[in-house]
Each structure stands twice: as structure tokens, then as C-alpha cells.
Image (cartoon, rainbow, N blue to C red):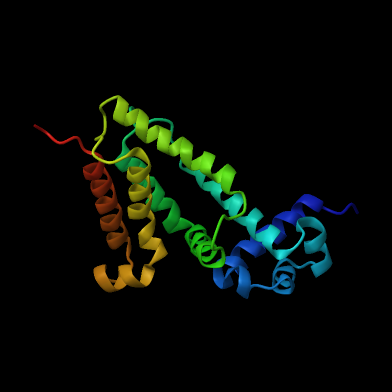
Length: 197
């Protein structure tokens, strides 16, 4: 029987997402990732190198998933509020990404792995905001990069700080999630709204 290399890599990456999201890059061991994936530790090293390289790969893959799941081309034609709502939905369904980003912020003082590539990813989203501003669809009161950052923060903070969300707005429920999503959409639209004169 042939060895399913791609399937094994997928198992390792899935296990690594869970382990890194739970314990961070410093608190996770390659042994625990290997055990969770059902492979020996040497296989993890052979496929992905050391722990820093595996963490970078995991985060890169998770960012690619959100980019594919929540695409945006231009806020000249797309509703920035609905975009924020879709970002909220994604983070609610996949809280691992927010946890991975928080761990990354704690683990790295300077540039993070793949930072240049990730700047391009966020640059595309900033360009979508700028296009909306140039078309007059959204306000120019904030610079495009700041507006994008604030929209992402509004949409993602609920899953980044679930304990704070619970203390402020009450326990999670479908009704509460609907309320949080609606507030996220409204806040994003208001941030981006042109002031009437």
C-alpha cells in the first residue's frame, strides 16, 4: 500500500492548528503534534522542518483559508458592512485563526514569518477600501489602511476576547450572535459612511 504523503501532511497541519491555537508556538511540542496526527515525530520534522517553520506554515494556510472564504475586490461595489459581517461569521466558526494571530503577536517582537507576503494580502484589502473611497461609496474621513484595520478589529474582537464579550453582552446564544453580527455590520457601515452636509 502506498504511503499517503499529502493525507499525512494534512493530518499534521490539522493537529498543528489545534495545538498551536491552544498552546501557542512556545507551549506546543512537536511530540504532541505528532501524537495528535498519529505519526512519528521524525515525519513532522521531515515534512515541515522545525517548530517555527511549522507555525509559519499553519498561519499562512489559515490566512489563505480566510482570504478564500471572505474575498473582497472593491468597496466601490461591495458593502463594507456585509464584509465585516462575513469576517465576524468566519471568526465565529473558526476561532483558531484569531488565537493563532494573538499567539504570533506574543511570540514575535519584530517581523513575523512571511510578513512581506502578508503585507501584500492586506494591501489588496486596503486597495479595496481606497477604491470605495475614490468612488465616493465610503468616507475618506479615515485613511484606507486605518479604516480596514478598524473594520477587521470590530469583526474579529468578539472571538479574540470571548470572555470579555460574555461579561459585557451576556452568554453566547444564537440570538446573541445575531445581535453581535448586526452590531458589527452597523458599526462598520457607520465608520465608512460619508457624512451628509
